[in-house]
Length: 374
Ligand code: SF4
Image: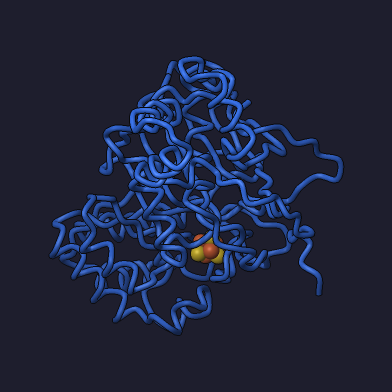
């Protein structure tokens, strides 16, 4: 059956997206144009420190260079297709259209003490978790490092200008979570390139400790992250304490069962000494009984970890129910009694389908698109 999310491929020409280039690559490009090396640094500053939205606004560059950049490169490729807000403007979901017609979403969540952006690392997702709207799309494609970075810069620019501040006074992002559409470790190289780009002290300079990556449990990715050079926080979508139940909810468990996942998690903690978050979506009468809470406590006993309980957010057509508040509390109490740090996630953006597991990137029929830099 035709996938309704996939759009006809539109060839966009070979002009490089500047956000896809490393500083050495940008330097090499400019040198091949006969430009002095310092021009690359100047442009890098525009891209990642000043967050300059257009070539025209790079007024310290010679006009001829700006014209050549505009003619032969692209300052971003994402087109803003739809923007929705909820929670009095403190939750903002953006639907992006990619140059090939595919779509993805990102969400800004403003709290009194933090400004968090949740970005996508793939268009769609191939992991097929039964409770997740993105999983129903299937994987459309891996997105590039630049396409990941652009999502972040859009919100950073909007906060700096005051346009996206909602009811808060935030003027910059404080937290970045790779928990939008897609499985980051299934697009590891590009995802990691985006992490390094955003972390670069000469550029955007975003602290690695304020970044969190969420994985469905791809064991090779967890092992790789354990050896990585930057201290990114790790969240693991667990959702069940035994293989039978987890495989029913998350097909990936057949490939990487719980024992393998726990081995990798222990290795990650031993190598990094960092606390892992276990995400546990609560589905009424499926995975939310006190017995399963006990089983979960047994499974993670002694690990440096925290459990984040997420009452399921509705996905149209899914034959599932959100756990009742009393069941959530009972589940949490079992874990707390067993000495396991455990919180219930505060809901954001349910009204605009921006909450966990709801991102489905469904375009409206007559949507117009504007540049991500606007
Ligand atoms: S929960 Fe995450 S990994 Fe699972 S289908 Fe949804 S986006 Fe993919």
